[in-house]
Image 1 (cartoon, one colour):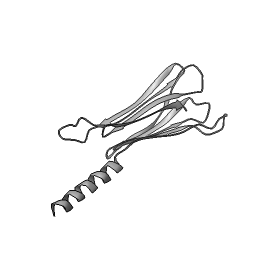
Image 2 (cartoon, one colour):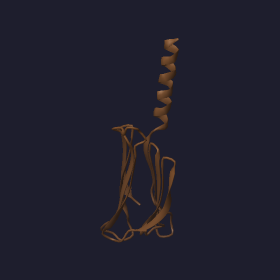
Image 3 (cartoon, rainbow, N blue to C red):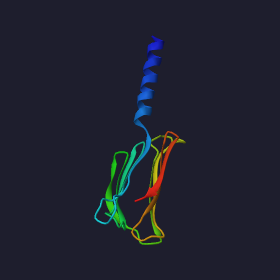
Image 4 (cartoon, rainbow, N blue to C red):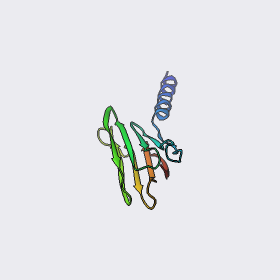
Length: 136
């Protein structure tokens, strides 16, 4: 009986570990002008963000996120040359707080070339990190 309870507990832990993940999926832009904008989908446990770049030449991004059960109102931000924008959310559903909160952060910068945005993103959950960088 104790072995059956232990097996059920292990199965539940494995199921939960499979659900909670840190993942970043990048879809590169399709140039030239008139193509499709690049897209970044970031998941850090219970935080999910979608960042969509403009159709090239890229001057800004559309950001939509959900943090736990809360949906953040989508917004558009234009990023002028030699400036940046950071998307960052942290969620610690533990009570008391844990040492391993869910986190998503993404720095998007317009540096050097007009119409090109560079990004550096990270997602974290259960102490597992995922990282991606590139061009929108």
